[in-house]
Image: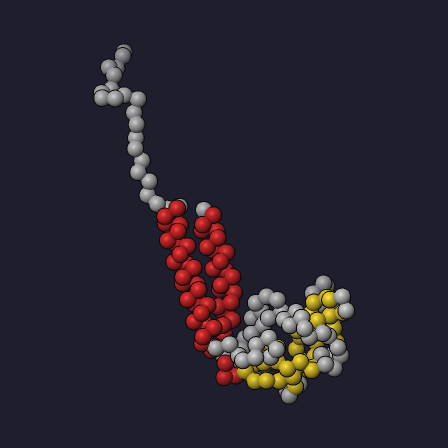
Length: 167
């Protein structure tokens, strides 16, 4: 049973990376470089965020922050500290859906410092191959360890024949 649980957990992590990879590949032509201008940080009930416009375009957006000893930094790129008016170069897509996939990462907006190029078909194929290989390995291992057919030998209390029935 632990084999199945480990396989499902591994597949969950891989799917968490494969789904955004598909979105990046599918919407790749719609991504453009833009500037996210940090405007104001908000505590947001323990999940700090920074609000600011995307330039050019002016659409307001949010990015996740993390607390550091010196203040706040972007969750998706801790090397970028929060400062009002600071410009962060990002990949931005007007068409891509918003799918967050952990550590402040999103399919709609991502720092160029984190992804110098928009992920493409290679990343999608890598995560898809990892998913298939992990799934097949998990099924194979589970088949050998968990679901293998067991030869059940039945033993009786009597060697040859049943005893006479007593009235």
